[in-house]
Length: 222
Image 1: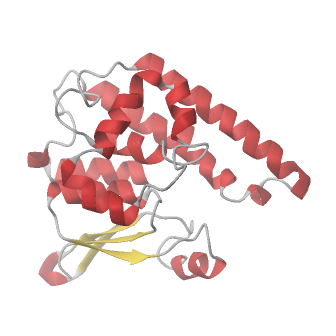
Image 2: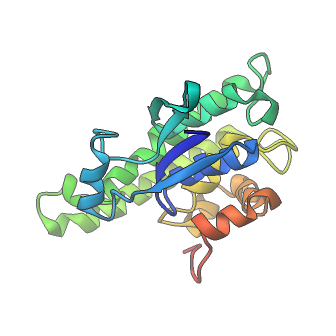
């Protein structure tokens, strides 16, 4: 095996990992698996990730063999910044911006991304199907409040959060903010971060990736 292998799906959290590897210019291949859409996909993924979630990243190993396996999108993105420092996808360890970078990477993962385990299938928590709408409504409200918290806690230093250079935090924000309740709700909750998301959307090096792996569509900002 040469390069990285990603288990992922169009429009999922794996697109942030694919975007990072694209910017790094590292070879990778995607094994398509959408466990949130198909029970068969979820079961097929179980031997790779018992949590039945994507993304999963298989690292390059020695002598062309598959290397170590990683799960958890924030951990994967952080690892890639450390493995490929020349790509400059994160503030350096001694940068004054490093603490905020780590804070908000963890925040998106724990306080926003985590809600999609519920939103993808409310029956995981709602025994009565009639309660599903309430869960969707309340998780959307909570996601909005949490985006507002981030908006109040960090001011972009340029087109991207830390200035002129894109980071994996920018990628993470741009991908997760596309998920429902959608960009329109995100822009309302976090107006100070709106231009950062748009800057990532318009990053020329990612144009082909977005078109293939997370395409825009009519009403996608709703």
